[in-house]
Length: 96
Image 1: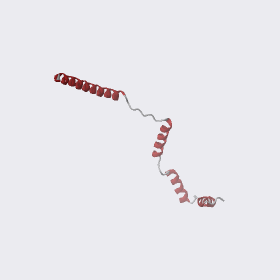
Image 2: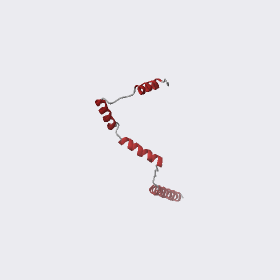
Image 3: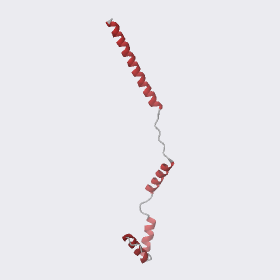
Image 4: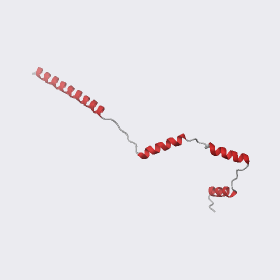
């Protein structure tokens, strides 16, 4: 009788081991069959393109800087006094 119980336990353990192995194979098959996907909206793609364009643009607009340097050197660079006064008043909060 004791041998019979031992044989049953062995059979049960073998079934459990076989079931565990099948579950592992199923997980591997599932992992191989599924793939992660990411989709980026058109708006996000536009934002990425703009960001790339901005990062490629120079920080200093040398064409404007050179034109201003030339105007100053030639004595032709003039800023109207009213424009300066307006900006100063706007900066201090006076809106005349």
